[in-house]
Length: 163
Image 1 (tube, rainbow, N blue to C red):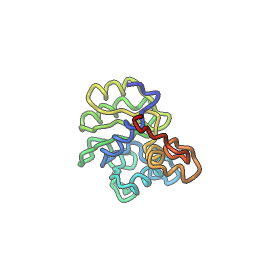
Image 2 (image 1 turned 180 degrees about the horizontal axis):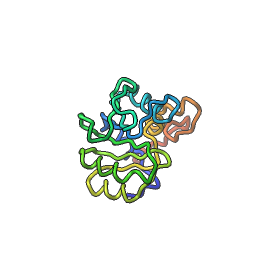
Image 3 (image 1 turned 90 degrees about the vertical axis):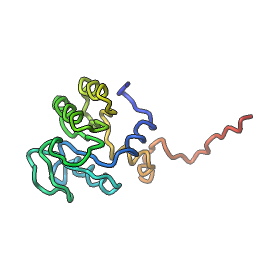
Image 4 (image 1 turned 45 degrees about the vertical axis):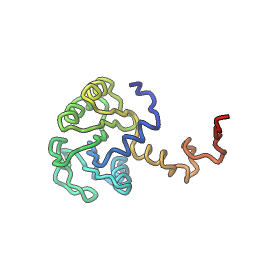
C-alpha cells in the first residue's frame, strides 16, 4: 500500500471496525497529545487501554495502564503508537503477536519496515496520521470550527441522473 495518502474509505473502515484501542506511549500528563487523543476517543465510544511501562499500574482516564501490549487482557483491534519511528519495530511485532487488526502510527511516526511486516501479517497500517483528527475530519466535526475537511461542503453535489 502507498502510505503517502489514504483513501477516506480505508480510514473510515478502520474507525468503524475498531472497538478497542491499545495506545502505546499514552501519557498520564494531561498536557501531552496522547492524553487528549485518549480522552477524545473514549468520548467517541472507543475503549482505549493505555500502554506505557513507566506508568504501568496507574489509572489513566479510568483505565489501568499496562506495561506492554502483551499485558492487555482484552482483544485489541487497533494499536495506536505515540512513540518515535525507530521504536516501532518491536511494537509492530507485539501487535502481530496479540492479534491486533490495525497498526496506526501517529503524526510524525513513519516506519516502512514495520509497516511491511504488519501488512504481511494481515494488519491494516496507517502512518503519520492521528485517529482523533481523522475521526473529527470524517465525521464533519472539524468543519464546525471552520476547518475545511473536504467532507462537508456548502456547494451542491452534482447528481447524475443517468442521462
